[in-house]
Image (tube, rainbow, N blue to C red; front, top):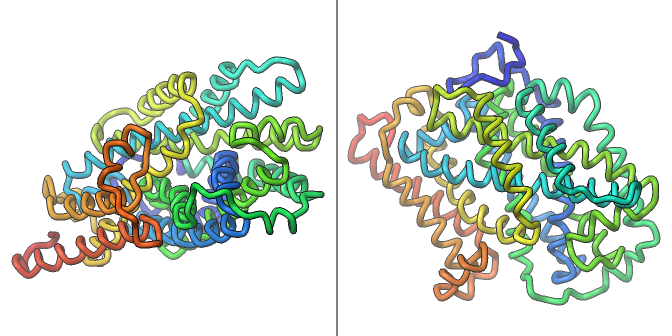
Length: 445
C-alpha cells in the first residue's frame, strides 16, 4: 500500500502513515485558507460595518475560530480517526450519525458554493478575453479537477500539489491583488467612513468565526496523518488563521475601494482590472479546486462512518457528482445565511467534543469503537447549545428565521458563538462528572 494512499478508512492511522509535520500541516491549512470564497465572504461585512469595525471583527473572530480549529486538529491527531468516527466517543455510535448527516449536508453545500465561485470567476475572465461566459462548462471543469484531487488524498495533495506548485503561485497572485486593492484606494477616507448599519459588530465576529468553524467537522480527517498533536495544533490553527484574516480583510477593502455593489460583482471587477489582475484571478480559480477537494474527500469519509465497507473512491465520485448538480442550479445569494446556520450547529458540537475529550484525557480505540449506541446526555448538551445560538441570533435561510424569529431575544451584546460554545462545553463537562459519580467503574460516560 502506498504511503500516500487516500483510501485509509475509519481505523486509526498507523505510525507509518503519519507523515505530515508542522510545515506540511501548516501548508495544508494555509492552502485551504487562501480561497476565493474567503475573499468573497469578506465583502459581506462592509459597508454595513465600517472598515475599522470590520477589520476588528475579522481579527477577533479569527483568533476565536482558529483556536477552536487548532484544538480540533489536536484531538484528531491524538485519536487518529476521521472526524465523524471520532464523534462516536462523545455522542455514541448511533448518536454520531446525526452529526454525520449534518456534516455531509454542509460538505456538499460548501462544495456547491466553491464550484459556483470558481465557475463565476472563470466565466468573468472568459467573457473578457474570449467573449463568452459558459458558466456551466467551467462548473464541469472545476468539478473534474476537484474529483481528481480528492482521489489523490490529503498526503498526496500536500506533497504533489501544494508544495510543488500551488502555494507559491497563489501567494504571488494574492500579493498582487492586495497591491491592486490598496493602490490609490484612499485608505484614510475608507477608514473614516461610517458603517451603514444592518449588521452588528458581534454578528460580524460570528460570520468570521463561521469560516474556521465550518472546518471543525473536517479537521481530524487531515490531522490524523500528523506526526504529533503539537504539530497538528499549531499547523492547523496558525496555518488557517493568517490567510483567513488576510483574505477577509482584502475582500472588505476591495468592495469599498472599487465601489462594488455586492459580493457577486467582485469577480467581474477583478477580471476587468487589467492583464495582471486577470492572470491572478485565473491562478486563484485554478487553485480554488483545493477547497471542494477537501469537502468532497471529507464527505466520503463521513459517509464511511455510516457505510464502513463502501469504497471510498466510489463515495468520492458520488459526492462530486451530487455537488456538481447543485452548483448548476443554486445561486450565490444564499451564501451568508448558509454560513450562519452552519455555525449554529457546529460551534456547540465542538463544545461537547472538547469537554468530553478533556474529561477523558483523550480517546483510545475502545472509547471510539466500543462507545455505547447513544449518549443522550451529550446529545442534549449539543442541542442546548444550538438552541441558545438560535435564541440569541436566529440565523439561516428566511424560512428558518421566520420559524424561530418569535423566540428572538435582544442578546447579551457579544454574539451567539461564544455563549453557545460555553453552554455546550459546561453542560457536557457537568454531565460527564455526574455520570462518573454514579458509575465510577465506567470507562466512558
